Length: 240
Image (cartoon, rainbow, N blue to C red; front, side):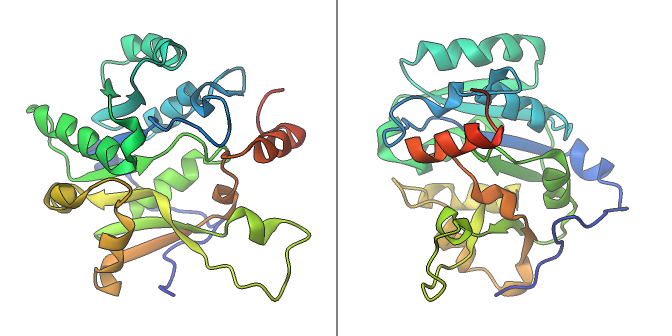
């Protein structure tokens, strides 16, 4: 297990002003939510669609550009984010017409969009989804404050946190999104992003001193199933 560079609840005194001036954000929001049975992008948190809530969260990091990748032919999702995109010129919407092929194509589209914006000078890219409903600004700030080539999030999965979890069952920690990654490396890896073959296996191939981790078990709570949605609403994390 790699040593974490931050732990949940730690106060960070280092300024992230320089990082925040030179990073982009890719929000992967083109999932079809097949297990959930309804688009998770338009679930409601704090009175607004989840995709809008997460975009506002990304805006707090002061990036040069935010690329939101959404699925094709989903008017509810498109309309939920269009008003915010009109309000903030940094927000770019990209439609993924191959959303059923896996996350890698969405990420590749995001990379291409950043590369096409010639006026930007991007050093790092934050990659995030829309359904880690307890994600907050301090966690994104911690990711950007890391100095390693990749700074990823570390958390348990849902099963580890359930009260009826069998203590003898081994459940590995998740090292994943959101994460901050060197932009040049991301461009180099773009050709290897195919189907469900995303960044995780590429990150595992890096030397350990190039990968930092930010611990945050709140990120365990994502929304993939009706049971998880019901639990989140019961806790008040999503609006009923």
